[in-house]
View (cartoon, rainbow, N blue to C red):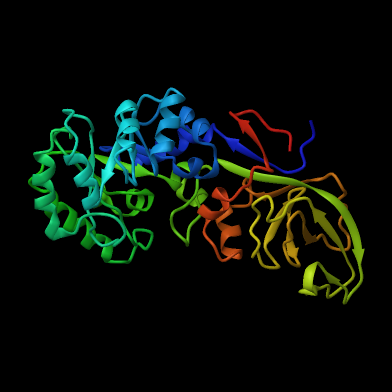
Length: 366
């Protein structure tokens, strides 16, 4: 079947990207972060591809962990948001998921349980993110309460999350590392600090476990660098086709609101993709699009189903020609910069209307 708009998930890139994590953090175990449908790449698809290479997984919510267990994933699974209601403990116990404990109401729920060794847990410490986690002055009291809690497996594990690790010059990350080490020095459980930025830029953040997220998908955690420049391979490429080529005279406008007018006579290509597929609504005129091996600029406003590009007066492009929106020779980080967003939102935003194809090393007909 000829597909108009589709994404290719290059599963062969996973082993390469995990190897890059190992190179950066050779002494740590890898907790692969596959929340939000594996950053839009497919939860079960990515989990099975990662399974031979990593020691554990991290998800945001209990339901994601249950889906992984039902799909046959056996490694440890950490639930980063933990739980909010006692009813969730049934699934956490049945499917052997390890919740983050970050608030007093969770302590109360655990203390009401009488089944011994119900859960392995991760105590989340707030070292400066100010989102989830126990403050410094709470840690010793929380540790004592959890140590007496029969429902909790011992020893306790500890984690924190960085606020600014993607800024290599921000001293806050070093302060967070020092505080976490101070707060956990006397405790014997496993520890985890580093996300992708921490893995690549902050060696001191590498403890028992590193939580590799965006870099597993071949995307840079840094705003000034692409994944390719970091030695990573993109996991997703996004494609469509030209559905029309039209002549436009100098001075004519293209698209909604007439935001772009052609300075010269040219050919305009119409591509079957828009914000209804997950292409960014706020991509500016000039955003590069790859057609027949060459880059052409987006012109005019992105609409629900279509975008338009300036092919140039001498273009030989035709309806039916393949188009790459990101991937291959067009880094997703570039598209994010032109759209005033981050690559995370682009991969997570691909909609169900886009067909998903898997590639495991062989060429895919674009």
